Image (tube, each protein chain N blue to C red):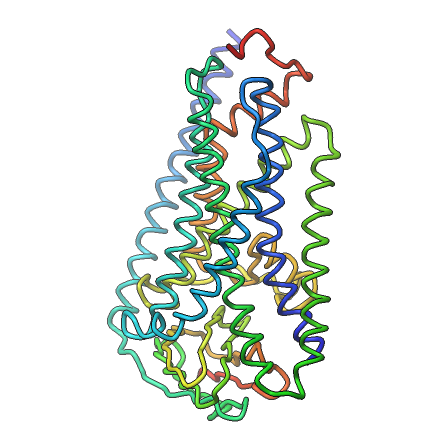
Length: 281
Length: 130
């Protein structure tokens, strides 16, 4: 019970922690890109975490009602909707970057960017938090489970949060050039993951037709192994992904890789720390 | 002179490349349509899976290979459980005293274990497709 609580809570926390760290990292990246003209603070994280917590509690409360919708596949539909919304926010974030250096409206753009990041973090906390809440609620109704689950949960949460913090500081410690590239790569993988998860959920609900599995890498990295679960939580690793999942994942990556943000970051990181001083109005 | 000879090779190889792309995309489209049509024709079987005392009843689900199956998961426990399977790529939360539906398949013949993520030690089962 202790171990399964650790694993479960850790997995959920990791998924949220990765998104929070990458979004926080992008706060830093955007401030560097628009050196002087736009400073993004990090206070939005607090608001989105708190709102996310409230949202998670609401979502957990309404899970019973939601699960009856659409002929008992309501949960898949709503979760897929959340994934697609997160994907859309990430795309908005990537396309909200001005194509020209001279930006007439940096404040407005800054607001859009913060809105996107808040939304992404909020939805991930709603998703993962509601599952944690339901799990804890159910388990702790039996008194003999309370202490192993609480301790296991705290340990799992601690590991998850530490991993997120490590990731953030690890990214921040890289040189500008590499932090931009790694941050961009992670953003692409997260977007791909969101798309692929939505495809999987809709297939589970029979809203999308069956597509055959494209490969089976369970001999290399089994899904149930520690590495497998870690990769699943971070980038949505699947040992037997269906064709629809692979196509959606690839499309997510490609769309973000071709976005203005990606082009700006790649170009910026290619020039050696040349901050375009005169260009920022 | 050299460039002309070289461009002949380049255009030659690009012709081969375009032939392959057309063939492969055509083959992919045909196979995708075949899969979609064949699965549309197959009837959907219905199965009930009950969760009680953190156990699955029945623990073994026998289905036909190549058939889509609609599993009604009925949770008779007051606590939530999560139906999960790595092999089936399915993960579904069922609240206490709730009922949900999960679609699986069409599956190739084989064994596909599943478990309850919240109570993994007791809630275990397997789907056998034959």
